Length: 292
Ligand code: MN
Image (spheres, rainbow, N blue to C red):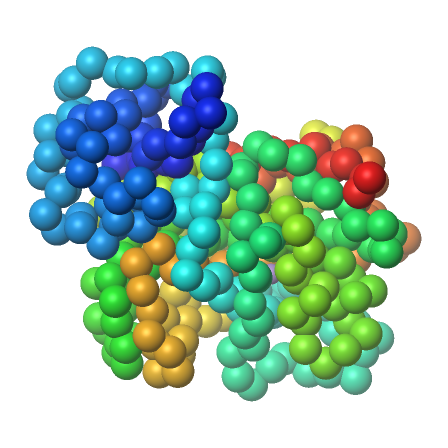
């Protein structure tokens, strides 16, 4: 199933995406979803609501997909964590010329709430940098409250997956030893176009081709099987530290081909269009605009 958050004529709702149509879940579930953060409410109550949503596969649609504005599927997740240097070829392109080696431990940083952004909304290039970069990533959406999840049970706590862009401001990111500021500019975590539920992938997210184009030029092309730390390893590590909750998001790392790795670098400029596509999860696409 594909589940989205959208707005139309100033009203926000969650929806079941069926091809080029949307069934309003706000309406179909009789207004029972919490008006604030309905997607998190839907995920939290999924064991109770799933059968009713499945039954809507043949119901009349409320909207055409093309007429709504898609938001990030979880517009305000409780938290968003992102892993760094999780594909070997990206590690290699990133540590050239730096006194670093392949990291021994998972590297984690937050993408803060202000960064979470709709899948087709413009990415703002900050005034204080000329080094804004793209990173195609698969995003995990957590399905249930959990702590100390063993690797072999991590699949049980995943609700679904989406496409993300871990937009990164390289000079701000690299001038300090941790990366929070360079990773959390406004608009720098586009996610979408919707959540693909885990069962759609047969439970395994490590079989998906991922690609990123800038202005139609293929820059990144890899496969989620090439992650160094699997989704399950990531959940085990994070949940050893903190309670994960419904709607929390995990950015699972980017592959090689980021703009900073080109010689000369290919950073984003006003008017550029970044398209990221992951097999079976869909595509997100955004134009870059300068901060006014
Ligand atoms: Mn990243």
